[in-house]
Amino acid sequence: MRTLIIAEAGVNHNGQIELAKRLIAEAALAGADLVKFQSFITSKSISLKAPKAEYQKATTAERESQYEMVKKLELTRADHEILIEECRRYKIGFFSTAFDEESFNMLRELGIDQVKIPSGELTNLPLIRYMTQFGMPVILSTGMANLGEIEATIEAIEKAGTPRSRITVLHCNTEYPTPMADVNLRAMVNMKRALGVEVGYSDHTHGIEIPIAAVALGARIIEKHFTLDRNLPGPDHKASLEPHQLKAMIEGIRNIEVALGDGIKRPSTSEFKNKPIARKSIVAAKEIKAGDLLTEDNLAVKRPGTGISPMQWDLVIGRTAKRNFGIDELIDL
Image (tube, rainbow, N blue to C red; front, top):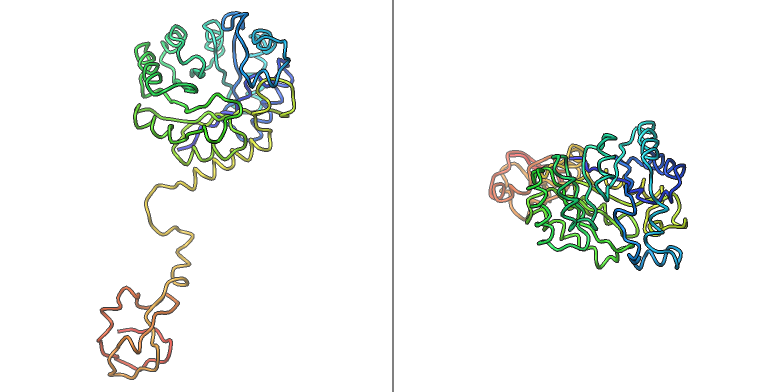
């Protein structure tokens, strides 16, 4: 199966529509399936007194509140329409995460046909019920959550009208960047087994190796932040990939998909030609005359593998040579 790769532009457009358009172009060039933004009305999702996360304090103006920081990153409906058209131009899917009902309604009106529930909204029961009542596929990020909380959210989604078979749960850690010791990829595997859902991985580590490893472990969706330049101002740029890294990650994932194969152990088409070269046969260790007994003293095992297999050694020992054999000549019976 092909992994759905979501290039997370998020708020790395810095509120600038031209920057957002350039992000779309780079996501398409890198080979992503979807480029994802964030849709929100700040006043409906963040209070004036909400503090910033530590990573946000480190990457944005010190005196700026979380509300002020996020307010500058809103996209209007007109912005969304421009970006959707830009995605059509570059032949890449447009996607966005809604953080409030009004923004979700706008996305539905614009044709978005699946739901992304971000980690911070995993416990927002009213919003979850509202967004999942329509039966669209749901992608649920699970940063900061334990298994019990995730199960409770899945049950709420099912009760709202979306079956478990349409839910993909993304393992995630919300620290930007995520320390390697905190990634815990095996939790993704455990969630698949425990919850009976498809799983994926939303990555905030530096580098590209963890998303590639997640695909090898069974991730069906990979979500990764990217930016045009990690030195740009803004909360998420430092923990994002630059375009050349995004491209390398996607190429790595596509290679892993092919390399995983079908799981049946058998010689590959490409290695059949190596079989007679690398394997060995039973040969004469010394000159053997017709009528001689074939023994461990006058037989050896050497390349090439075009004669009797050494696995037949016990059947050959004690037989009578039917003809003369020179040194290293393949034995035949």
